[in-house]
Structures are given as C-alpha cells and as structure tokens.
Image: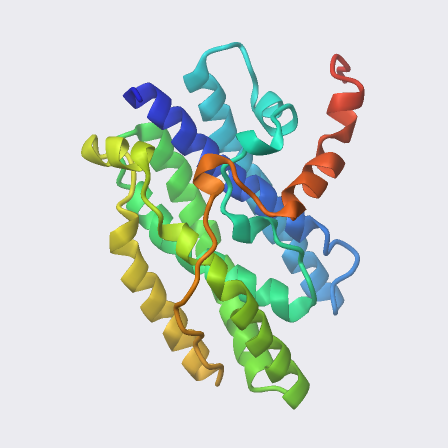
Length: 252
C-alpha cells in the first residue's frame, strides 16, 4: 500500500464515521423527548454531516478520478464503507443515543486533538474545526449522562443497559491497521493506542459521577477496517442512497 492509497482509505474512514453517525442522529429530527433536545441532536447531526463532507471531499481529491464527495457518499457499496460499527447501530431509546454519543464524542475529542497537529495541512484544518464541535458534543452527552444516571430508577437502568450493550463495539475505535501505521510514520495519522487510556479514563470519570458501573472489557466486535459491518449499515445505505441510485445522472 502506497502512502497515497493509505491516505485515501484513512480519510474515507474519517468521513464515513461522521456520515453514518450524522445520518443516525438525523433520525431524531422531530422525535426528541423535548423541543430543545430535538434541536440539539439535529444540530449535532448537521455537524457530523459537515465533517463528512469535508473529509470525503478531500478523499475524492486524493483518489483523483473526477469524483465528488457526493459520489463517495452515495455510490459506494456496503463493503466499501469503513465506518466503525458503533456508528451504524440503531438509535434505540434516548439513553442509547446519549451513551453512544458519549463514547464517540470522547473518542473524537482525543482523535481530533491529535489530528489537528497532523503534518497533512488539510486533515489538520478539518480536525481543528471538528475538535471545537466534538467538545460541545462531549459536554452535551456528559451532562445528559449525569441527568439520566442520577434521575429515576428507570432512567438509570436504561442508561446502564445502553452502556452494557454498546461497550463491545468500543474496542474497534482503537484498532491500528496498515494505513494507520504508514501514515503514522509520516506524522499524518494519530496513534490510536495512545488515545485509548485517555479515552477510558475520561469515560470512567463520567460514568462514576453518573453512578453508572463501567462495563468490563471482554469480547469486542471488529471488521469495519475491512468493510465488514453489522446488518444495519445495509439498511442505512438503502435509505440514504435511494435517490442517487434511482436517478444517477440527475442534477439540480
């Protein structure tokens, strides 16, 4: 794998994570538990879509086949997506969404902090913008963890169950593969192994204050680095890509 090939796949992965997470969060539009939260989740979804557009636009430029970010978002098959599996899981109830957002945004704060120092100026610039947004996403999900964890018996139980179910998908966030190692040597990528203990300590602090028991590390799902996904991604793409696939040459 050349450095250019590694950079293309790496930026695809960054864009795919934001795209799929943004799509999932958009499913809360008009369905939030309160109006303020309906707007908050929709805005977080829009932040993710904007981040996806930036990363996929750069990926298209790296590939150099006259493709656009829209081509990469709407004309790739399931096995050509590299998003972490946790992003494609159903939104579930509000506790599931909050737990997932805490796990992902805590990771993104650390990831974008590292990538904002990347030797690749485009990645560094996108990451710097993403860092500002992910800090807000973290605070938002952290505060809701406190409210749900120390709320009623029902809210506490639902949040605990959500973290228990999502935890086996977190190991994949820190997997280092060929493209990571190639780009790490060039100072472009982040060393995910260094981020893991910081992420875990931050999550542990939030869960302790929310009176939620931190799940134990055991079996972890894997496969997305090679395009292997849960059954849910195919359903997302069928919905998300329908218009482009039905009318591939349509323009505004």
